[in-house]
Image 1 (cartoon, rainbow, N blue to C red):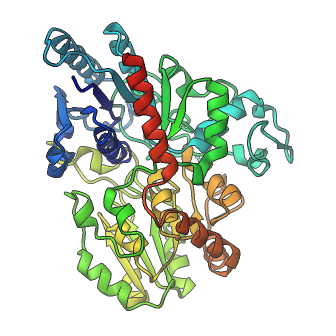
Image 2 (image 1 turned 45 degrees about the vertical axis):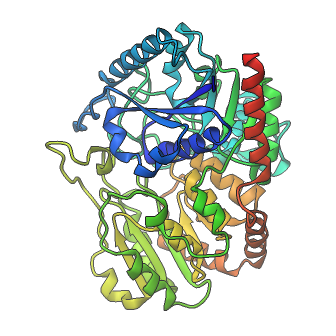
Length: 510
């Protein structure tokens, strides 16, 4: 009988999208593959996924997260979602264990933010593989910072991290926090699983730091928060590849003394098959979010701009600058005289989780949100301001795009790198700080928006950052060279790693 692998993602597009791509890669290696999700996420699964003969979807009974109540402390309190899912998972495993035609999976690939499920899998003696949807650098730096006791760094001191590239040495400036938001400030999703903890309901990912209002690098002094969540796993998968992060993959392999495979970047199949052409998001990803523009309008606007002239500005759907920083960004874009696309999400700069987490729920309301009054009139055709969803893959693959002002979320980072777009890094929290350091210090395909992220970002910081990015020919050349490594498709090192995973599981079954 063909062996079965389960994939258990965390909630949110940044976790669900790579998990779906992973399912396709696993199924292509002749494993029956089951994506295990809470039922309230079923609408996020594109219909084409059902076309893969070895791929199935298993839904666990669940309710959507409760609406965020202002003034609660902690800001994202524990709730019944975890218990409901845990019971559903246990029931599913129990049913499968009693069915000789299906049986238990040979292995479960579990997102590191779903570490609470390991106890359920252990009960049924199902081995687990820890899955990092972010890159290896954040996990490696966090582990090395713990081992190197960098919390003892003195002002001006730089600490080399044994086993890691020297350019990744940490200074005290790397450990400064972003300005604090008020309780309930934006910075993370509502607590959706796991035992009650500092994030009010789920374990922290590599590089994250606890309560969402505590912006910036993680707190130091203890072991990485993910380490305890994955300690029972037999191996680890990371959403990266050798061309991007080989030293960091090797470091983690040496430290955890278990197989660590770089099996990404887990981007859509068409992304890899269209290395030299324009990507159309509607052909690649299901989108149910609203926008004030169509893909055709974005293409027409980009077509009217010179080669590599457009600055693309987007902070993703879950985090963003402080409310006080948005006017500075608007003023900088007005003053820069460069063409730009600025994507502004609903709830940008506001308190509480982003509204996308509560779409469709009774009582859901639009919260505080920044809107750049009259900026479109001031800049005219030089700027395109998008409210809501934007066709990011299209924008990054268009020849008119020349730079990306980004929060350095992992998916956005690798999407830009794969298309040779230099990055102006404006990290907000958690692993984004380490991703930015990887981009600027190790890969050298970007610049920082400011040397001191512990202060509010000013208009002049942004203008200087943009001009620095556009004027750095070395950064542009390295971005082009790195893009060339991906022109032949999905990285060969990741193909080999996925094959190694297949062999590893098959050997355990003998």
